[in-house]
Length: 178
Image 1 (cartoon, rainbow, N blue to C red):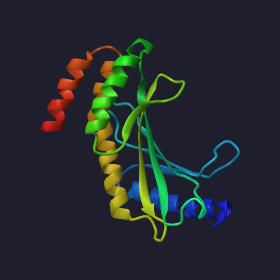
Image 2 (image 1 turned 90 degrees about the vertical axis):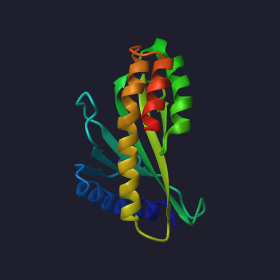
Image 3 (image 1 turned 90 degrees about the horizontal axis):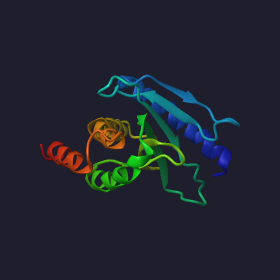
Image 4 (image 1 turned 180 degrees about the vertical axis):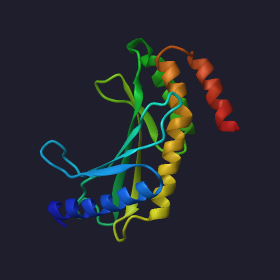
């Protein structure tokens, strides 16, 4: 399959994803690829965080051709958390990520390159032979949203030096054991 056909397939699949998100109660819109946007992207408004800040999910497919892989598609879920971390907290945040990412059920947290921002990212492997499996995608979205809400505030507190690493690890241990 050539790259134009891959992009056309992704556009159709993302249109379906937009519908799934809307049914789940998350307003979503599809942005078609352009010179400014290299890949078709669905943007969706997830649940607001504990401080009532908006959180926007971006979903894109990796543009793999049949030469790359013929049996799977890779759907990326990407959420930039709505806060900045202080540069002096980077080291503690990175240590926190080791613990958080080892316990996180879905995806990983990281620092966005060249920005004092935290992101949550997951790549779902899907069969190339069928349309998006609505139930599986819905469950991934639910868990992805829940995970970022459950852990985002703790990451922010370490990133803004409101909590020490040890305090944050204790809170995470309590949340994940309960």
